Image (cartoon, rainbow, N blue to C red; front, side):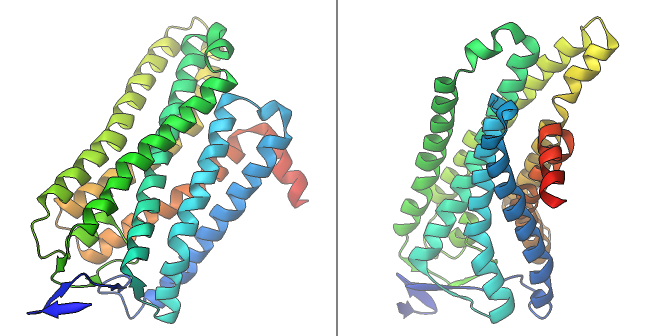
Length: 309
C-alpha cells in the first residue's frame, strides 16, 4: 500500500472501527447483537426444516418464505463474524478485496430480500383478487423463474458496485467508520471523483428497493380494494388475516431500509446512530421473520411446540 500526502494508493487493507464514538462500550453491544444473530440462525434453520417436511406448507407463500430464510441466513453469516470480532477482539483490519466481497454479498442479499417480499405480495394479490387462478398462475416453474429473476437482478445490479470501486485508486483514508463494509462508507474514503459511484449507488437503490416498494404498495391497494368489497365481514377478516404477516415484514424492512439509505446520503444524524440503525435494519428482520410467521401459521407453531416440548 503506497501513501502520498496523507493519501493512499491502491490500499491492500482497510480498518473498520466499529461504532464511532462508542468504541469504549461496543464490547457490550456485541452480546445483544449475538443474541439477535442466534435467534435469526435458529429461527430460519427451523423454517428450512419445517417447510419442506410439512406437506400443507408446500404453497407459494411458504416457498418464498423458505427462500427468504436462506437470504436471511446469508445476511447473518456475511455480517456477524467480522462485526463481533471487531467488538470483542479488536480485529479491525480487513483486506480491501475481502471488504468489497462483503459489500457485494450484503447489498446483493438485501436486494434479494426486497425481491422476495415483492414476490410474496404478488402471491397475496393473486390469492385474494383472483383465487380461482392462483394455482394455475403460480406454478412450480413460475416460482423458480421468479426466484431466479430476483437473484439475477440483485447479482447483476449490485455486482457493478465493487467493480466501480476497483477503478478508484486514490483514497484519503483507509479507516471505515462502520462495523461492516457498506457501499457509501467505502465511497466516502475516495480522494478521486466518485460521482459515478454515488449516482450508480442511487440508481441501484431505486431500481431495486424503490421499484419493489412501489409495486408492493400497488398490490396492497388492489388487495384492500378487493377485501373491502367482499360481502361478508368474516370473509373480509379472513382475507386480511392472510396478509398480516407479510405486511409486518414489509413495513419493518422498508422503513428501516429507507431511513438507513437517506440518512447516510442526505441526513445529519450522528455516526453511531446511523450505524446502529443500519445494523439493526440488517439483523433484526432476519430474527423477526420466523417469529412473525411462527405465531401466525398454525403448522409452524404446532411444529415448534412439538420441537420444544
